Every structure is written in C-alpha cells, then in structure tokens.
Amino acid sequence: MTNRYEELERRVAAVEQALGLAGPADPAPTEPTLDQGMFWILEGLRARLPEGSAGAVTFAGAVRTDDGPVEWQYGRATDDLLGLDDDSRELVTERLAALGHPVRLRLLLAVLRGHRTAAALAELDGMGTTGQVYHHVRALTAAGWLSAAGRGRLRVPPERVVPLLTVLAAAL
Image (cartoon, rainbow, N blue to C red; front, top):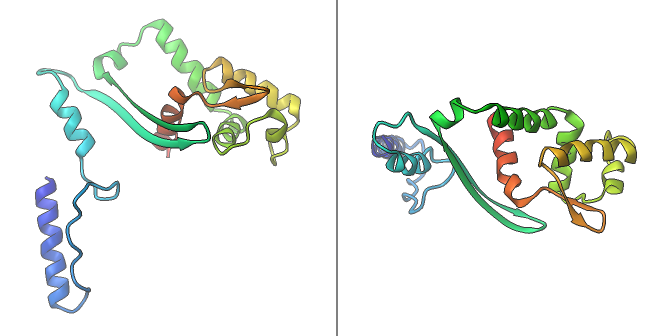
C-alpha cells in the first residue's frame, strides 16, 4: 500500500511540476515521519502476531518530561482485552473515571507541564482551592495517575505518561 501511495505522490508531483503548478519535487525522505501515513508500527505489529491470532493493540511513545525522557511501549492481545476479568474491569473503570473529571484532567496536564505542587496547581485558573486540589490529587493517586515525588512535589509516574497521552490521543 505504501509503495503505491508513494508512486502516486511522485506521479502527481511530476504532473504539477510539468504544468508549472508546483516547485521542484522534494526528495523522498530517508526515514518515516509521523505525517507520512506510513504504517511502520502496524507492520511491526503484524509481523509479531501469532498465526490465527485475533489481533493485538499496541501503543508506544517517546516523551521528554521534567523528570527526564520517558520511552514506553505496551501491547495486549485482542482476546485478552475483550475478556477482561472482574478485577481488571474494575481497575480500568477506576482509572478512566479519574480522567473523566475536567479539573483532574487539567491537573494532570499541568503536572506534566511542570506545575508540581498543590499550591502551584491551586494558583492556576479554575483549579479551585488547595483543599480541592488535594481532593483531586488523592483520586488521581489512588487511580495510579499521580505519585509523590518528594518534598510535596507531584509527578505523573513514568510508566503512566505514555498511557495517559495515548488515552488523550484516542479520545480526540
């Protein structure tokens, strides 16, 4: 599919150039980029699926945070996700419910942007009082989205950064 797409792009660029509608064609990139529509992650996933598998879902990310770089990848078989047991369904429900409150989501994003204390978070418009911030921090900590980073500081645990951003990307 990708080769057909690239060939079509090359041909359209040649026609546009011949008609004077575009400048010279850009050289083909040597590495995949996020905006090319290339399925390099999907191709890697397909290559790893066992024969007869119902499929799998995966996500990965490389993110710079104040705590340093976070690189994370995770995948689950489709059958595992569709057959979650009671405990797993309860955990998923708790984690998603914590994200469902607009102030909590804003709070998480603010922590990722460097606002690391309850006092700093309470100073942001719409966050509420320090007491209200602590209420939301407790809920987010219980759900695993936040943790203490020492001396009254908060952080999104490194193993939750990419999953959080993945949930946001999937919801957009």
